Amino acid sequence: MSTFMAKKEEIERKWYVIDAEGKTLGKVAVTAATVLNGKHRPEYTPHVDCGECVIVINAEKIVLTGKKLDQKYYYHHSGYVGGLKAVKYRILMETKPEMVVELAVKGMLPKNKIGDASITRLKVYRGPEHKQQAQTPIALEVK
Image 1 (tube, rainbow, N blue to C red):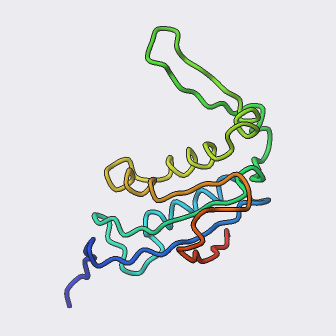
Image 2: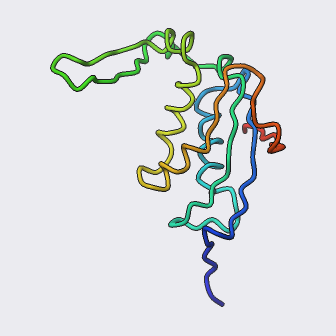
């Protein structure tokens, strides 16, 4: 019996929608990263991008536990001397909650070409409405 290897051309991608209202950031990100990577499929092959598409709605109603809103920072650097910027997650959640979810999911994906391709299939929306109704997404429950 030979080992099954998935081929990129034979993979059919489905769309899944995750409602993040009242859920913790980490659990939503783990669920989204698993589906984006394709590890939930029985025909998962590590060297082939066999992940699916994920829509996350209600990103503004996601929960950060503990004191993370005040103690956790998002850092980025402009590239110039003294160009380190730090933003508290409380301010980031008020202004760009989509970015918070994208950063959490991106950190859980592999750091290679497959991870770069997978993050493009993630769509995050602030409210309950999304633009992918034509794809008929399947509701996915966060464990």
